[in-house]
Length: 157
Image (tube, rainbow, N blue to C red):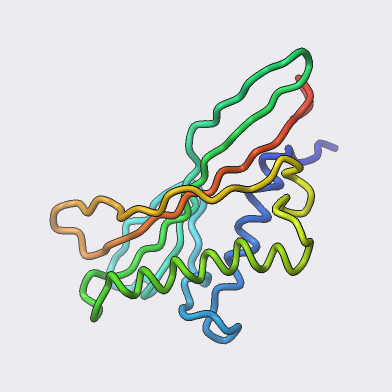
């Protein structure tokens, strides 16, 4: 039976931390109730008031002998309707929720930035940016980047 790759385990753990983002669990939003993996959703009128998207960027591997060191940028995007009062500040609150869920939930549980040991080289926070808004779009968004860094043996992801 095949096992998950280190990359897959890290992405699954990242998603499992974001699921905690609910007002009932002490966060400022319910953005964790709608998480999209690998895509930025296009919302309609019946969609949730806030959502998260995990968008994986191009990795940058370096090979040294039989060892591959890889850095994978992952942007966690927060998306809200542009029609809500002070949409920008709603996004800022969700960015804070994301930081708490990814950085504190993991630290409390494991005292490490390694995502349950899948990233022995660590997890780094990158830039936060406003997502470009398509003309006529009813939604606005912000993205916060995290970089997953790990090693794997050649042929053993």
